[in-house]
Length: 202
Image 1 (cartoon, rainbow, N blue to C red):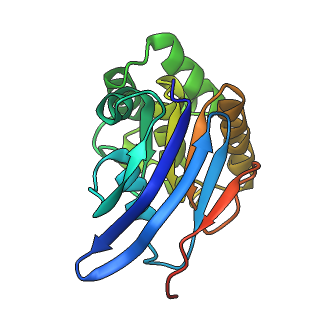
Image 2 (cartoon, helix red, strand yellow):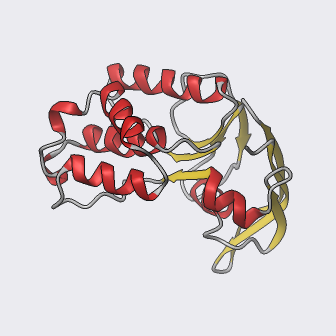
C-alpha cells in the first residue's frame, strides 16, 4: 500500500504556457485532495502527471516507500473525463475484461456490479447506456480491482443525486480502508477533503 502521495516542487508546461510551477502537496493514506481552478488551470494535467502519463518539467511525484513505476503499475487507478469503454461490447463483458486485466476476481466484479446497480444493464451494449450508467460502469472497475490511489477527473459530473450519494459512500469506504483520492472537481465532493487551488483564467 502507498503510505502517502507526495508532490514536490512540480512544474508542468503545456506548449509555451506554464500550467503550474513549484507545486507541492502531501496526501496521507486515508485522506482526499480535491483540485480546483478555472478551465485550463492544469487539473487534468496534474492527475496525468501523478499517473505517469505526463512528465513534469521540474519536481517529482513520490509514493512513500514504493518506486514510482511499481506504485503506478499496481496501486494507482485513473478515471478520466472519457470512461475508456468500448461502445460495441456488452457492459458485462467490458467490465469483466477491464477489471480482470487490473487483477480483479469474479467475486470482486460481482460485488461492484451489485453495489452500483449494474446487474440489469450488463447484457446491454455499452453504447446503449446513459452517461451516468457508463460512469457507474467505469467506477465498478475501480471497486472490483482495489488499488490504493484513485485519481478522478470530474467523477460525479454525469451522475444524478441518488448515484452521487452512493458513489460518495464508495469514496468514504475507500478512505476508511486506507485508500487515497485525488479528484479534479468543479462541484464539491461529498467527503471531507483538503483543497488545492490551481487558479488559472476562466
